[in-house]
Image (tube, rainbow, N blue to C red; front, top):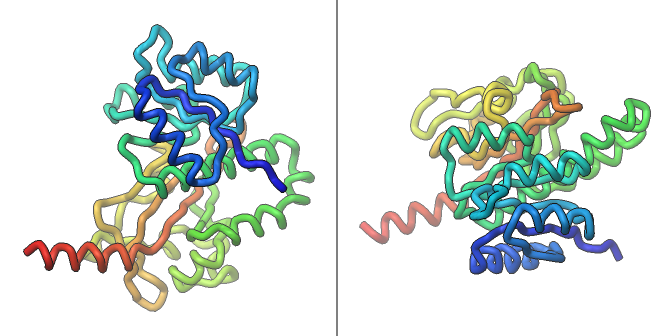
Length: 272
């Protein structure tokens, strides 16, 4: 039996830390430790070598989460996801220096937490494969494609110029483009996303990822327009693929939210 992934939680608010631990366990992960400072986080990484760290940026200690992450990355390539209740530009710019795998704003939903963790594991695996060399990466390509095809959400990957390199079956179904048609095409051709009630396209996700890094959502209400013109409300997450620090492409993970939209509309009608 494959052991569960181990996630270290670094959070100085005890109630918040316990809630995150509970949610992680419900999602199928193990939490070997909860620590409240950057110094203790460094110690635990050296002792336990967890698979991932959820790191609160604003630790009320001498060493904040960003400094702790930089020190950890000096001896380990463990993926780190930042947690923060603040999203100001200054904090974001400081956080980018340490190249986190994701940046979650509190409060966040379990699904958002799960998707970001799984993307972090996927990106970390991809980066390790890239470092092992092209030949080994080619040998593992089939395995990676199978893993992406098995993800329960739609996935599209592109190079840094926005040319599609991978599209899984769910993304094909939502977009109306099959793999043969989509590969090599510009992302904007296949992934045609507009703002609700208009034909206005959202910001180019490739440019947004290159400019800002990880993002969650391109607008408040977004619809994917398929090849045959069908409109589907979608949630979207974009994240960069890096090779030795340089962005070589992006990954988009998206899913239809038709049912949640129906419930939202019903609740709105009921409340009015």
